[in-house]
Amino acid sequence: MTNEIEQIPVALTVNGEKVSKLIEPRLSLVDFLRNELELTGSHIGCEHGVCGACTVRVNGEIVRGCLMLAVQANGGEVETIEGASDSGKIDDLQKAFHERNALQCGFCTPGMLMTTTELLATNPDPSREEIREYLSGNYCRCTGYEAIVDAIETVAQERKGA
Amino acid sequence: MKPAAFNYAKPSSVEEVLGLLSEYGDEATILAGGQSLIPTMNMRLSAPALVIDINGLDNLNGISDEGDRLRIGALTRHVEIENSELIASHAPLITLAMPSIAHPAIRNRGTFGGSVAMADPAAELPACLCALDGEIEITGQNGVRKVVAKDFFKELYETDAGDGEILTAIEIPKISAGYRSAFDELARRHGDYAMCGIAAHAKVDRDVLSDLRLAFFAVGGTPVIATQAMSAMEGKSVDDESIFAAQSALEDDLEPFDDLHCSATLRMHYAKELTKRMLTTLSARN
Image 1: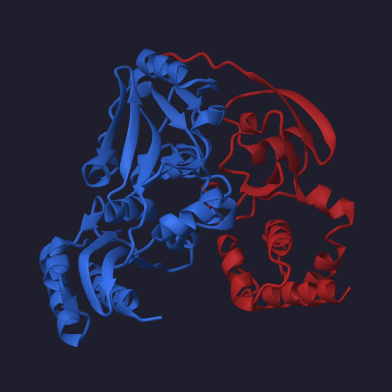
Image 2: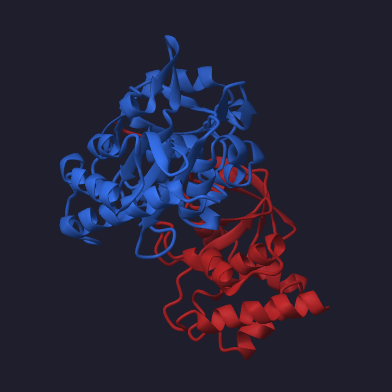
């Protein structure tokens, strides 16, 4: 069957800015962010929901940017690592990742930071095991995770003391 | 790793969905949470001409108390079920299974109905529904019908829902007094597809189990209800002897397969180990 593809108009808020575009339905949210908006902080690893490098927040919840169509974010609010970073609210996390050597190549880091932000919002005082469980959907091929867990634990303790 | 081009529709009623399904036939596919469908489309294992996004059907959302059963709308997200007091009180098996379903970002998006309709042999919820005698509500041009879980899962990725029908809800009988549930699975990485998993449910009187249900997943094309192991254990105290009898009976119940992750022999070993764990957990006094 020949299939003439109809483009779809979308209007959404990305990192606080309103965006309107005409897009193909097959465009994934992360491709939309990277290619249409040049927000290349969200990375594309596996494109089938396994690695977590494309994690972004949609309407307040983290999702896989490769497993959501951009058209599905129509009318919604998206936050990427660029927005989270610019807001200053993850400064302590970023600093702890740096200090604890919780990244080497850095490819997984945006996804790690987005996932950690949700973890600490829902569970401000996680055990190391709970941290590992929450991050189970984010692959890191450099660090062996131990340093990442250290960094997150440090921030949780600092925030508790603050 | 990009999906083939498709057209997109976002209807606002079940009737509209049924209309599109009858117009497009098997060239259309229903998009709920998308956490299984989109990977298959990205890998071009499926290439529908039309994707029908049902996320606008608000009346398919939510969990309700229907007296002796719970009704879960097909679009209810895993995260909502994981955090639901109603589910924890009346269908604790589902609450126990939730943390094993993929990862937080996927549970934020994935839906109960989508998981059941996809009928992945390694998925947790189909086995839980088989253990609990859940019912699946399917809506089509001829109205609404219900199918019990054990008849719904037909073959690998094949269910009783036909072309032109849509899964609209799942109903689960509330747990009765004296009954307990247990759940476990073994996977290479937490949240990944299981190499073997089990959902268990029984009436427990001290350490005696009756009306036992053992439903396995990731050991066959569909969830497998281990009837021989269940009858080996029926009315018995949980001890080394009865556990061994139930484990031995699994040789008749299961026909595990080899794949990249795990051999058939290892799967059978895991099934026996999980059976022991479940029987012990169910009978543990607290």
